[in-house]
Structure formats: C-alpha cells, structure tokens
Amino acid sequence: MFYLGDIKMATRLRKVRRQRGSRTHGWGQMAQHRHSGSRGGTGMAGMHKHKWSYTVKYAPDHFGHNIFRPPNRTLTRRWINIGDLATMAEASKSGETLDLGSLGFDKLLGQGSLSKALSLKIPRASESAVEKIKAAGGSIALEKPSTQAETNSETKTSKREKNKEAPATAKI
Image 1 (tube, rainbow, N blue to C red):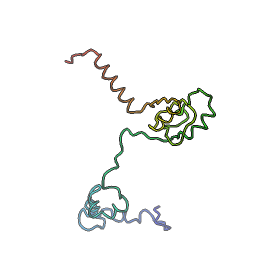
Image 2 (tube, one colour):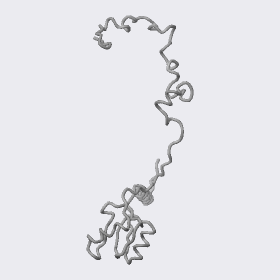
Image 3 (cartoon, rainbow, N blue to C red):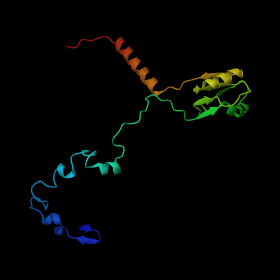
Image 4 (cartoon, rainbow, N blue to C red):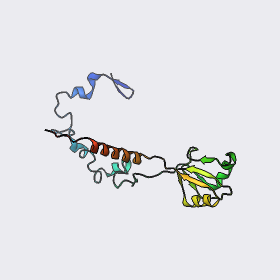
C-alpha cells in the first residue's frame, strides 16, 4: 500500500501505474521534465544567475576566497605568567627545577614580578619573561616540543641518505 498522508492508496491506483506506456507522463512533448535543462543546468550552474536565491539561503559562503591558515602555526593553548609562579615555587623544594611543560603549560609570559630565583623548564617563553627570571637569579631551559613538520623533514632527509647509500642498479 502507498500512503498519501492519512489516506491509504492502493498501488494499482497510483498515477505512475496509470501512465505506464505513456511516453511523457503528462509533461507535454518529448523529453520535457527529464534532463538537466529542467533543473537549470548541472551541478552548481547558475549560482550567480537564476539560482541566486538558493545561493543566498543555502550556500552563502560559496563564492569568495578561503581564510589563510599558515601551515606551521604554533598554538598556545595554556600559558602562565611570572606573577603566578610564586605559589608554585612555594610548593616545590628549593633548588628543584619546575617543569612547566609537564604541568600542561605551553608558554611563560612576563606579567608580574619574581622575587625568588627559580629554575624552570618550559617549551616557550616571552623575552620579558626570560629577562625577569635571569634578573632574579634564576635559569630557564627552553625545550621545543617535536612538531609534525620537524618529524616529516627528518624522515625525508633520512630517506634521501638511505637512497644515496644504496647501490645503483641498472634496469634493463
């Protein structure tokens, strides 16, 4: 059975069954309502012309350029200021190195002041932060985390070296 809203309609009574054998199925002369001309062209044809209202409603970002995204950008998801290090320094023992990278911090910023000499380990730090730590008598070790681009370049160079070392074989 075919359901048309709340009305049950037998399959044998459907319009498609009635028009079997009809060449055009009620759409006038040959090939009307059949090919791409009836839908205004194939694909996205007419987006700037006769399908402009569709473009405005359903595809407003279709035209124009994409936003530039640098390939090797460094995201700073979590940072800490020098002024916030005082509470962390109290918790740690004197002479111990604070590993801020393992605590989840990406960068050290230079806001605030530091009265105690600290030795820190962090992936990145601003210039003012490094100056303030050295002025207080402390030390900072900047360790870059390995990025995807660096690992790709290392594998490329190692492959080149392996190819140079391999003996050249003549192909017949």
